[in-house]
Image 1 (cartoon, one colour):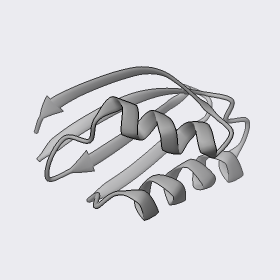
Image 2 (spheres, rainbow, N blue to C red):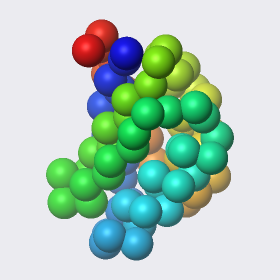
Image 3 (tube, rainbow, N blue to C red):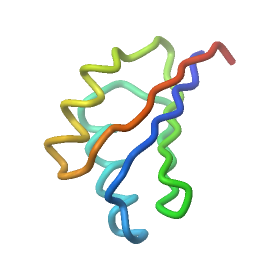
Length: 74
């Protein structure tokens, strides 16, 4: 398993978190997606790493901005 922690700007509320979570879940095969608008983060757990540019495209299309990306084995 891989955990990716994304910095995401533009989320203002729980509805925004759900929007990001849903769009990532629909675009990729993931185990879980959890966003936190107060910390400006989204944590994605998946079987394999998802490329930063692919995540950026989905987040941009949702109306938010990817500001950072880190990936580690879990």
